[in-house]
Image (cartoon, rainbow, N blue to C red; front, side):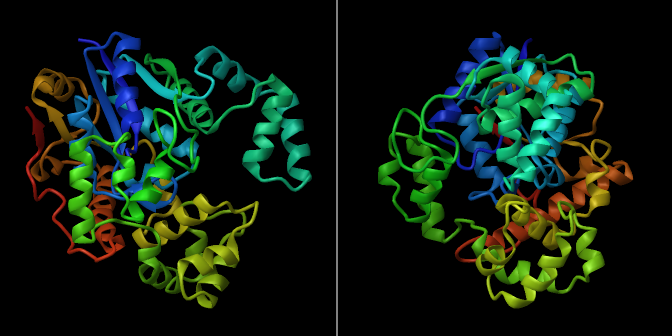
Length: 396
């Protein structure tokens, strides 16, 4: 039984994800694909457009064999924290042989060389010089890597570097594979090529234009999306404006400084802006700088609403647990093996959460709260569901 691990968000699930799943199994000669997926909020600092249960359904129908939820604490942090949490979770399951991630370079050896270069004095000097010129950290990092290694990493490569770093930090035996990204680039606008970017797809979905997405979404996904649009259950960051402004205004500067993702004095402009702004769009415009990029600001605001603090981030990886969101029936042997081998508690139903450690119980409660807050991000705010209100998804 060979198992390939995949870290994903599927926001939303599209043809590029189906391609990745199929190619990952083929490239690694695996029998099963085990996916660790962000839950109700994603790493770009936004609510997932669709619920984790619906995204799990789509993934299982198009190549995933078992889907596990990534705790919200891991999703609402930096790329390094996101990767560290996901890799520690995969490694602790004790059933994953390989990791396959998308990459613009498509070459693990080049990425490893870039990671090694990032630990050299030449890289540190180039990074410092670029930052002094007033560039953003991502731009400075890319320039430093070009100077130190001669490569220009893409957005997926940066996350790939963090996966490699996390594998090294936890001394994992998981073997990494990089799959060259096909189609539109990360965050690229416009629908073209074999696989459009999720950013372009989300724009069409928000506009209600599902017909244009036919080449990129399966009929089942389009049908489910149409039903969600009809119910007004399409979730966006802007819809959370009243919730987020309330959460920010009720906190003192000291409390803001204690939130996850708040550092380098970010509490000061946040404290002022949340009182000057009437919407989150206005707040982000007031605070965003090269020093404080948009995704980080959004994550900080969501941490305020969910109560995620720096102390919670410091509980990685101790707070991790294995929440099974769904599986294909043919993967039952994989689940049985996982339940026997995992170093983490495996939760398929609410009763399985008994006996969690204090750190795991904290992550579990934050995930339950996230599931109750996320429906408020819908165009027509939805009731708070019981997160375990539906049985474990098993696809025949």
